[in-house]
Image (tube, rainbow over all chains, first blue to last red; front, side):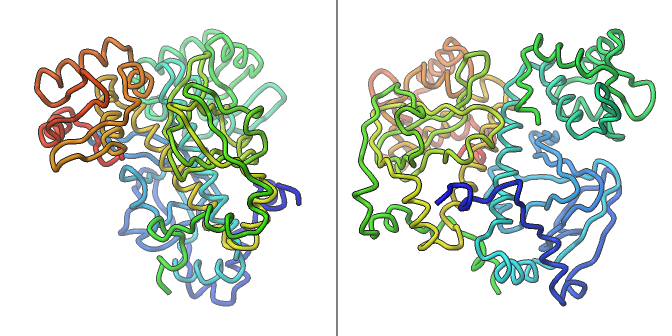
Length: 235
Length: 235
């Protein structure tokens, strides 16, 4: 027996929405919702529903002394933590819309009914847990870096999320600002400004208008090596 | 349908070893192994086998500039990362025996065969992923604390692993030393020494012989509040 036939594989992902939409009860149990930029996902607006992101970006973090500690982003196709497991996490999580987010709000009992029938091996749940586990590990690796390294590490993450407009150039996501980067890296805005200034002066980054653009990816990657950034871990 | 009936619950854990031992082929596919204190688990000594800890403690971390960055402990009943998922993690993990460890080394194909048959819903794998996900989140929360806070946070973790010899007193695990605590908290040994000295002077901790003992848990917990340690996250 091949090991790969048994464990869920990311390349062979079962599509949750495909399964749900095939069920005749889908539109009775689901509706779409817009969440405005900056809005927090609470029990009030998603309660015991599954929220599946269709567009936009959601940041997940937790509160430490009332300060939001960024952990990771969730994007189209990702699902927000299931209520059953919220209590299992060691800190109260907090989801915030980074830009306008749209998604399906789906009755949890309906999701469970469909999955029980159509995904008896729980491949979808396992994939979800594995992906979020990887994200937490990455958050831990980032937190163990020096402040300046964290800024570079976060830029790597944003490059991965960006739009590769040529072989050596990447548009970063629209929502990127000095403040966003400071929150992601858990550093002061002045440190972000100093890193950005260095990258601009080196003609590696254009940040005068949206979207920010990495103009020379090769040069950027060279700096990552110099700064000892664990690049594989950022993605 | 109750939500709890669908998702795997930690309180209703399926026992992997029970399932495996019930199979007539168990002793043909498995043997026990001793791993000495300080020994690293590598492909050479566990290769494509599942290692299930029977006794002792294993620490999991990753290498950053050749330095071991502690993430979490694994104990009796826990299983070491499955080879299939090692490549999925954002950094190369490293398992080290904290004291003498014994465990079952079980052929992976055999494990898969039994689980496919006896755990078709993959409850065991899901539980494993959820538990390690929680451990990574905790590692991230710890890394986001100040150095001194991290020492206290780690003491909380050790208290949880310890032996509650009376209502207000806990023996910490035998392996606890200043060096172990410094590695766990990713701080200098001198900082550990200063925290330990303070706790000794306050008659909260006895560390003159093994095992270290928290003499006054109430007083210790009071300090945790003062130092703003997220105590729920430590456990």
